[in-house]
Length: 157
Image 1 (cartoon, one colour):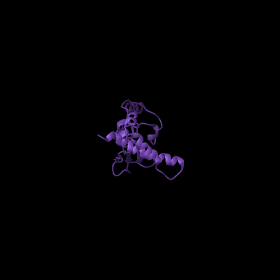
Image 2 (cartoon, rainbow, N blue to C red):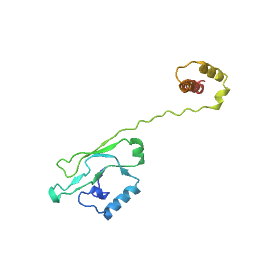
Image 3 (tube, rainbow, N blue to C red):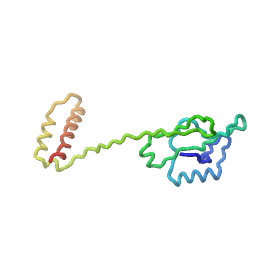
């Protein structure tokens, strides 16, 4: 996050739509460093020459950048560009939102469970239970119950 004193794209300059060598070098440096702009809200232009009328110039000179590790861990994060105060630059704040990580592993049926003497007994018992609903719902509930019981096969001493 910072003031880079150069725009990255032509659209980030209110008075000029031409690409300069400095812009190309800046963009190439960002790409080479494997960085990308963090999503932004608020003001588009982050700097102003503080003039009005025909002499007014605004640019996006300030930005927040992140690498793939940042986006992977904090993908829901965004930079907010606040309205300018007395400075010619807008203040930036980063709103950090951690992604919720689900650590549950997918269920895997392990073939050696069938060798357990109680395996068939558990399957028969669960399969004989009555469940309400469509045939697909009934099968789903039976398999879900079996899944919970099969997981216990791994935890028994």
